Every structure is written in structure tokens, then in C-alpha cells.
Image (tube, rainbow, N blue to C red; front, side, top):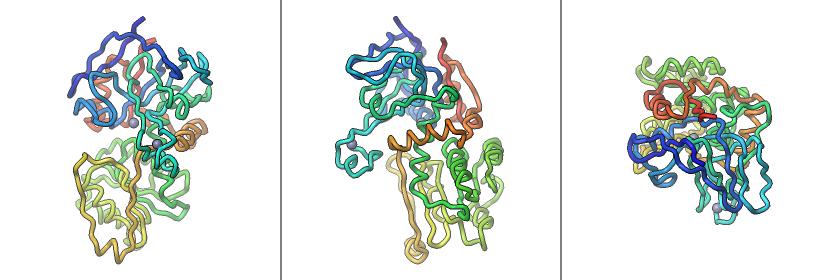
Length: 346
Ligand SMILES: [Zn+2]
Ligand SMILES: [Zn+2]
């Protein structure tokens, strides 16, 4: 038996191929993919043709997916054929230095999986044990697939103190920036959202952004954002959700004295950014990073998608059949839309 899959061979070289359906080994779970969603990381991998930590070509790629359990490998697994499930793209080892310190996102042996852009995806034993979850009947596959990126944001959100009188500047209105917006509004914070795309800023407004700043139209973005804060003092918290060193610098400059900058977007490796020593010292700034997700955040993310705390429908702005996955990734590179659902043939 074979299946259709999108195989990455190198930079911008993705080929639709018929490959054998994987046979689940000990503890592994074979999932018939219901929907996959596109992600900035996949677009990056598509352009570069590889990712040192996540994927070595040729390989089936994509990492956000959900579907139905098709076959369970030998070894007393709790999973049964027909269950609707979503898997995270990684699982920590549970034994290393960082796992023992309850920092599983920093696990020294984080196991990644790829293979979402196919009719079937094979979930490794460790992910099947710790980061595979059953989806409630009411949650469609394309919404459930958002649990992974949302889990990253839930983990970032756990790093910041937010209450009803907090003003937060969010830089970026892509999937990550818009997920932050939704969690912040659920916590009743006031949100100032910046982006260069009018379409994405419209969605931000729809999802409750109190102020939107189009960075193309305001000259100096930092003063534009500060101008929208109490007395021009700056935001209590500023979040970088883009992954560009210049935006990291701007984000820190938007924060008021005693405030916090959460630098969330991953920048190209080897890049650096500048911090003003005086402002860090005299203004008592906190500068914080956040990476990836934890099993707890993944669980929480699925709960939020199920309970409607998060508007998943607004995040999916296009749909493509699996055969057109390259077009779906091109939309990200062109900054069009938010996320696309990629649907394999029945
Ligand atoms: Zn992702
Ligand atoms: Zn570990």
C-alpha cells in the first residue's frame, strides 16, 4: 500500500511522490492525516532545503497535523484505531538535566517529528506516550492542528505577568502575534498590535486589538507605539513575534521603566542585537526569551481550542489540497493570509 506525500529534496524542491505507508513499530502510532496547517518554520525549511535540528532531506515535511488513528504498533499502547488525535511535533526525554528541573522545552534530547504533508504520518513512541492527545468531537481537524503553534504561545504567555490593567505591545500579527493577542484579550489586557500587512491588522482588530499600528505608515514605530501608552511611558510588556534582530531592539525600546520585553520570534542563527546598558540598569528592564513548548502547554492549548477561548477559524485564511502544498508555503513567504490548511486526498 502506498500514499501521496510531499517530499522535500532541497531548497524550494518539494516533489509529490507515492511512497509506502509506514508500518508502525513498537509503541508507534500511524495517523491518517485529516488536516495539516502551514507554519513559518515549514516555509523557512522549504526555502533553505533543510533544518539542522528538525529535518534532513530527502524527507516528508510539515509538522502541524491531526487525524485519525489508523494502526497501532505492538506494545500495549493506549491508542485505538478510529480515535481522533493531534500530535505535537516533539517530545522531551523526561530524564535529562533540564527535564528533571521541569524545563522540558530545553530538553537535551528533544525528539522531533516531521511528515504532516502526507496522507499518513507515523508518530514515534515517545511522542505517542507524552504528546499525542485525543481531540473532542466538536473540534475540526484543521483547528486541532493549531495546538502545536498555540502551545508555543501558551508557553511564552506563562513567562509574562498579565492582568486587566496591563498594556502590551505585540510586534507582528502573523499566527504567533495573533495567538498572543487572543490570550492577552482573554486576560483583559490592553493590546497595541503592529504589523506591515493591512490584512493581518484587520484580523487583529477583529480579534480585539485595542490599537493597531501599521509600521509602514508611521515613521518611527517605537514612538508611535509609546505614544499610545500612558503618558508616553511605554508598554508594561512588549512582545516580539517576528524573529528579526532589529525588531528585537525596537521591542525592548517600547517597554516602560520596570517593564518586560519577551523576545519570542526566533532569529536566523548567528545574529546578535544591541541592548542599551543604561536603560537596562536605570530603567530596571527585564528581557526574557521563550522557546518551543512543554507537554503541559500542549494540553492547555488543545483545551483552549476546544473551549473556544481561542478563535481558531479566524487563523485559517486559505485551504489547499496536499498536491498544492508549495503554493500554500508561498503564501507565507509573500506575507499573505495567516495560516493555510493542507488537506490530503481521502
Ligand atoms: Zn509550527
Ligand atoms: Zn530531557
